[in-house]
Image (cartoon, protein in one colour):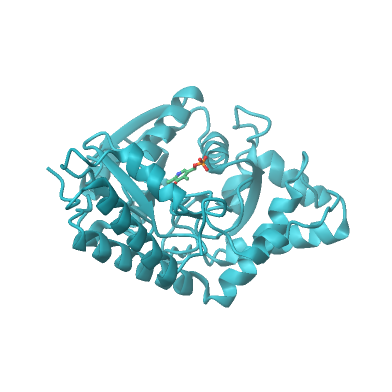
Length: 373
Ligand SMILES: *Cc1c(COP(=O)(O)O)cnc(C)c1O
């Protein structure tokens, strides 16, 4: 059971990992060790297979958190004379706009409110109107709210207009299906420490091989140059700079556990069950989720802040944390809120224990209902 020392992380990453994933790190490997290079090649192969990209795409890992991969993807694939269209409905879409500005790439933003999916009709109209747009960037699950964007319809529109789609699939990869053969994308970025249930320290881009090979010299950065990283790996089998060996070993174990669970569909099913338990249990206490069920991805749920003045979020957070549950503050600009994640190495028992702890904490605080204003 969770404790203040070993909490359950109900957050969007880092998140709760299995003991076996943590134990996979109890081994030092050199960056040139044959054992490490074999592990690394296997991890890259498995990641490509998870999106059905074996015939078209390659996996380029990059040291760092997820944003490093997003920045590497945009910087390497959008050329200096290209133009990016970003579909934004939260902080992660806005982060891509910021990256494009820092890279001095031309960028057009199509925004919808944080509780409204990307506008596919406006996307089609914009692509028709502006032939200079070369790439479209979208966030599959916008972790700011927990909203699922219509990535299949976006991909269809982008392909029909012969542009290239770049996906931030950070909080969906491994749990929500995305297949390169059915949903055309140029590249996606994701990381080890979300739905794959690995530890933080490595991210990766899955990119069309021909597109990557045409991207030499685009990147405004040495470290975040996917072409250079890939070319060096192809030539030497090794990473350019110190690889996060322990993190790759943990990811290798995490991918084996992912496969044993039934791959993307098995993992997605567990998260959907977690999400259902969470939303139903919170509704029973009067809490109201931001999103209607049909827009909610089974990754992280945003709840509106209760109206009761006795509900002080900091106190609620601290009391839950003392019981061994870490939740997450809100990131919305539209309304005060907080978030609870459904992902990580957790299941029905942990979700029920979290709900019981929330019920106890509300009673201690004298809050009768989580109902918002
Ligand atoms: C977590 C996340 C990222 C990357 O965040 P890091 O803190 O850099 O790991 C990017 N996009 C989305 C949608 C995410 O959920």
